[in-house]
Image (tube, one colour):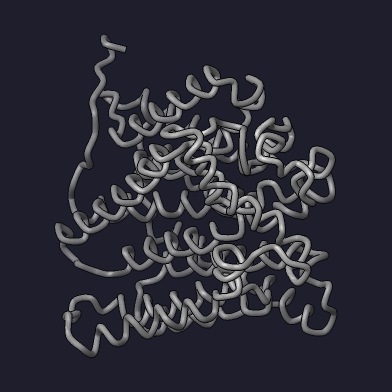
Length: 419
């Protein structure tokens, strides 16, 4: 199977993930009860990566991908050793946690060629999906339950707006009109009323308008004031979440569906300390598997009676991402940060060595990373369906930068007779 067929199948998986893993995910989940579309997409990608790996002359595999798989393999062994939960729970949580990394590294390693025709089709599909989201948003202004009935929750609506708008931007030539169109498309997410989206939209305006002109960037008083001003704006619009999870105490004034998130954040430092340095293990804390296969750690810290974290009702147990890092401890946090450092170092390297020196792809990668960073405060987006697609698009974008730079990438070669 040559590269042309690999590109074709990757493109099919990409469109499938956008359609069924983002746009129709909640409809499928609520109507027929199938909530594993993102896992299915991740599996398709991994199989495609396997086909790609076996059809190359040398078995080329990115060293960072190997390191990531090795880290997760270690945590499986560690979790089984300390008995963080049952073996089934650990296996379930493993697949959930590794999904975004599989999506990113599979796309980055395969590095499919997205020609003009495919980009044109993806752009048109993105516009069609965005128009559907526009109709939902406008309907919600008249009938306030429109978003809830079609997308299940305003946050899912906002996420769909973000990824479809970024898909459109990815397919453009990054002209001034393209940038303004992207910001206009993104603006309908304001209807969701989510403070996280407000913060992301403020960042998007800054990145697209200011960061996209890095060729003329200089560290002077004017630019420092602009950056400080944008950070201040982002902080103000997202202050509700920051204040709630990092400063407030649980009082009667705190909404009931927010208490669980606050308690998870408040308990996280204790787990980091008590389970230093590798954490409490997979399926033990602030993840879906830790609720489904109820972890003993909630009773251990006396939070098993908190609404949304109980054994009988754990719907808010995985409603945020950063507390779940306690499962991996200080070492896991370092590994998580290392991944993002690796990604941005590759981005900067490819940008400097590229012939066009265009900020098109760096802007998209920065926006995707910012989106996941903001969402992680009060949602488990990073390991959810929309997060998997965001990581897939990020891997595809970084691969595009690698192709434009003319580099073959940083790989570890495994010969057939050594496998």
